[in-house]
Length: 148
Image 1 (tube, helix red, strand yellow):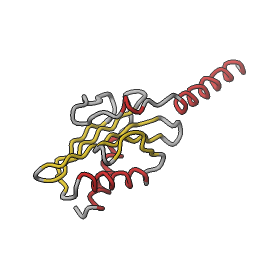
Image 2 (image 1 turned 135 degrees about the horizontal axis):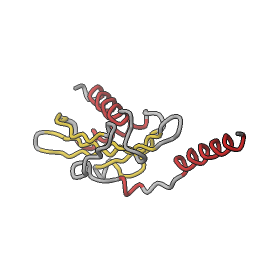
Image 3 (image 1 turned 135 degrees about the vertical axis):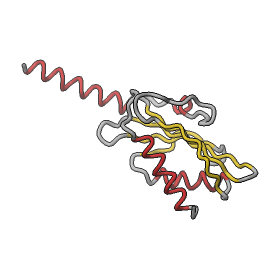
Image 4 (image 1 turned 60 degrees about the horizontal axis):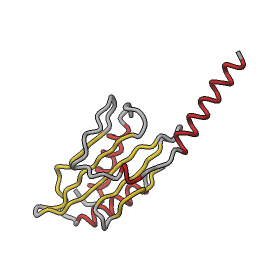
């Protein structure tokens, strides 16, 4: 019985280490949210094209997104820049450190600045709604910061 428990314990530790230490190829996640396929899956992995137009410039909107993301626990910018017009962040879950990727792009149009957001998990298809909740929170904070 101890051998079985030890094997299970070691498997859990190995899995936790793998999830946290697997190399990140940021460029493979730094894709255009407008042209990317919907992540699909059983959970709520989220592809979101914001129908709202912002009066601020794309640079100002993305600068606000950087500040919002940096205030989100366990979130780091892994690719892109405000100047590029596209940002990709990784947010890790508190317990296991599962990485979820959120890519945001902003495009200036005649009517205003339009956002596109793609949020998806690296492992599995079920995210229990965390990606949608993060996108919704970021957009609410963006609206508050821009007086919308």
